[in-house]
Length: 176
Image (cartoon, rainbow, N blue to C red; front, side, top):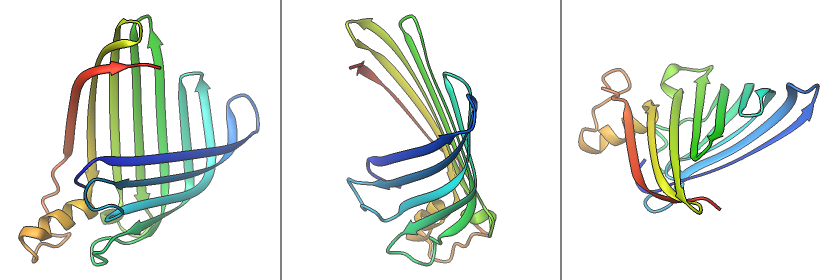
């Protein structure tokens, strides 16, 4: 994907006890500066949510449907898959930590599977103003194939050299 990433997630649950809930998760991801909704992803699924601590939420959806939107139908296929999302958020004095891991395992083929892991750290210096650092790792074969075929249309999933995607950000942050 190129451009700024837009992601919105909604989790609904019915508590079974203090640690477990039946849940439904909806998530939409796309870029919005370049190629809006090309590709775009809509995930809808149901399963369980586990909250072992106040800082950690783990969503496990064995029944999840990933709908891909793309002008290039040859590389992007919708799929039934299993989805796991783990989100850890904590604050230690002036230091805030957030880690989010999102895994998709397609029941059709591994070529449709992907994962993203984002880690953020912030240090508050004065009245909500601070320094922030974010590091992300991503593996998505559908997006890598689409990007590779721009330069070489003969590239296939079998011949794809799918390098791990990564990014980092460092800057000034503000907490509301």
